Length: 545
Ligand code: GAP
Picture 1: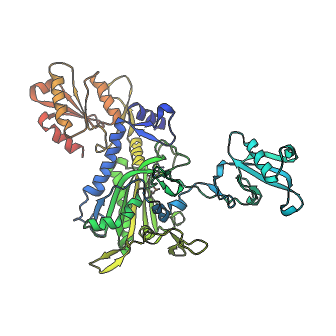
Picture 2: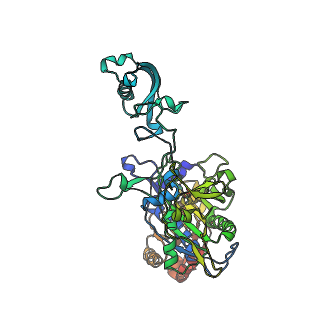
Picture 3: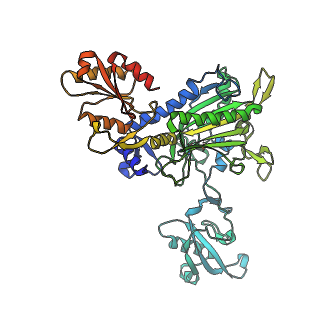
């Protein structure tokens, strides 16, 4: 499949549009069109229904060590900043930046520009001037050299008329190639060597809460929905009768200031996640991890991603986050990736007791095999937790413990994109339905996620067929998302529905007028058969499961 064809279809038929397109678009942001919103909502509804609503807490699911309960949450996007400090996102969710120990300023590493310069540096306290070669820097601006001249004049203490005593060398460059930071003069520094080595910069979007807010009122748009679940763990326990093992599910927007948003919706800056945090006893956590890994993989296959393009990949030890004792990715071979490469759809992680402990005690770091509170140079705890007791008392075992967490974390946009890629099919048009193209483009969506479930057509616009078809449309609309179409040749109408993935077309024809049956047509097999009008809703319901 050629990705450009799918992207074009998504735009032409109203699945996906670039955000703010009339203003040239905004990189990393996407809007779902009239069909896209239905498709994505169906994906999220199927996930919620299968993971939460229809989960039977009385029955042991295949592969599960015991029965379990499931419940849901819908948390805010902006939360108390301490949430992100204790979770580790504040310190670890990063891109590259540098700090100046002298000016206390922070710079984006790739925004600092500099050039080598040699000049006479006047000594302090009357000491003699000595020749010095330094890499003088400034922030990226329209005229970097003018800014560097000003910075160098300031550094060497020169008057304007003496500026030509400076010897500039080499091109204006970033500091990426510097072997020693000791020779770099930071953009606002008076001494060389005050810049720290580059550190990753935070991918969380920052905002200010309150009209008069300053830096102390800074807050963040959540980069994952998971933390809302952890901080509400106690609320859920206290307000419901759930008992460990149980899971809390949440679907919602997350935001990441990705440096390289790309590949359609695959890596966006605003996206939706479908996450479960599953709380269990430490002793059974490994079994629950295996269960969720397999359960979630099976879900994608049940929804139509079966085949070689889907795989489950266990992380190597070196890939694991510092708190994790096991992570597996469910991956799909997206067509925009090089042959043989896979992209992550979902991560299933064994997170141990890291999250609940972090929100109780404070930010944790690994020390040998232990997770310990991170301390600063003065021995003070770096980010304090809530101090609330997030442990669980098991009244059957008569034991108090901090539950371990298994986290199946999936992206609603990535899943939707995978379903779009998988569904896109071009086959030879059968002669009976031959329209203008020799090839038929169809989206083979699983009926559960297809945006339109059935289309109702009168064969011709006469003999009372439109009225009958419109009545039928009205009846079906109460239960399903259906469309009515009476424009153009019947073959052309079928094609329009195939291209948006409608699994069934219903035609009211001459025979309907005499025996009350309609023709039902299957999108994939093109098989056609007759069904009494009165049984149509039941027939569709059974086939759409
Ligand atoms: N709570 C764990 C967590 O957030 P993650 O692997 O960073 O883990 C989980 O994200 C899922 O969210 C990914 O597997 C992917 O489907 C989706 N996701 C992450 N970043 C994304 C982005 N920039 N654009 C679209 N989806 C993204």
